[in-house]
Length: 476
Image 1 (spheres, rainbow, N blue to C red):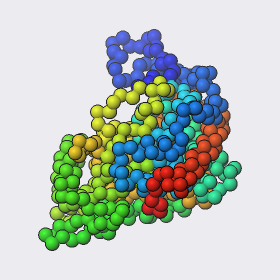
Image 2 (image 1 turned 135 degrees about the horizontal axis):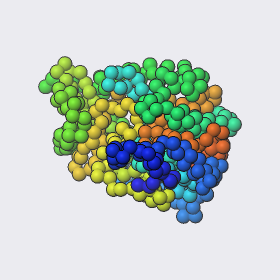
Image 3 (image 1 turned 45 degrees about the vertical axis):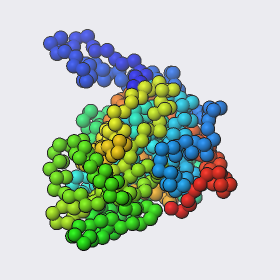
Image 4 (image 1 turned 90 degrees about the vertical axis):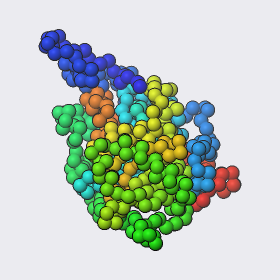
């Protein structure tokens, strides 16, 4: 794992000699020069340099990159994945986290590490329910999570705002402003967190304060509509639509091809058996809750754009009243960013379990996480386990009105800063990001340039689909 890239301050003279330096805790005096260390990084990596996009000569063409990313997936589902990526340039970006990581290797990095989402595009933020059923808004996809350069998440998010704005029909100035405001909100939020006490910073910016904190008032109506839908997006509602009564009094899933299909008995049994190991990975106080449910059925369910082709199951659990809880058991593949991180100075230790990597990365970034997160093995493959449809809701950034694009950018930029500040010291990043908008303008320029590159990549994929070079099922 890379060092932060800044010289860490030494303990001050006069520290009480009776109190030893305890590993895992900060040394006395460390905080006073953390911001200065961040400022010093500007001399080596000027903030203006983040506008750079220099694609390597060995860059794979877009079609080959998509084909490579399909390796190891369920072959019959990869045409669906290609078809979804071919829909729009924004959809292409969503499925191309590995290609963008390849391209980011040649861009400036400060060496400051953070737990990354790894796929921090604008559609990977959303609402979900906490343990009491209240709605939380945060990052909500962590398949690619890994420790790496904070700039990579920020640049991916800013680029996605440009492409989402273009898809929504916004003019180019609006799209660039969306990227600019995304970075500005990230920078200002990091500065706010740096001024707070450690505990207050950790839990800062309650969701009900997000709109005022990011001046996202044009987004209020959209958020209210999404929230209303999210409250009804529950396991019970999904089960009511997707299952039927069995002769023995239980329930089972109903085929809804190609998205949902029942599986052979042996496959269902393997998934159910894997949940025994899952119980050892959830928080111990949740085990009695899960013990009150009975496993009734297992089905295969196709998941989102970047994950299409991974093995993903839904498991129907019923309690003593017949109330449903649905778990998602989703294959955890190695992070698409991992092969590219050593080139920028970040060592990637081999994950003990890819599902564990995803779960721990999620917990390191979110303020509140699903109480039933865990991991399991099914037929020798690693999986993550989580609640399915726990009041999830999301804004479609490609369907926003033009006056909402920059509001959404500011909101997601603030959320990304809060998530990064759980693993990277906000004082260090605030010192680097600074007061003015130099970083905002540079990353916005990068985002526009990379959005142009993504549009060209998308066009290459569309041509390949039309020529029959690669199979695609459109509109699914």
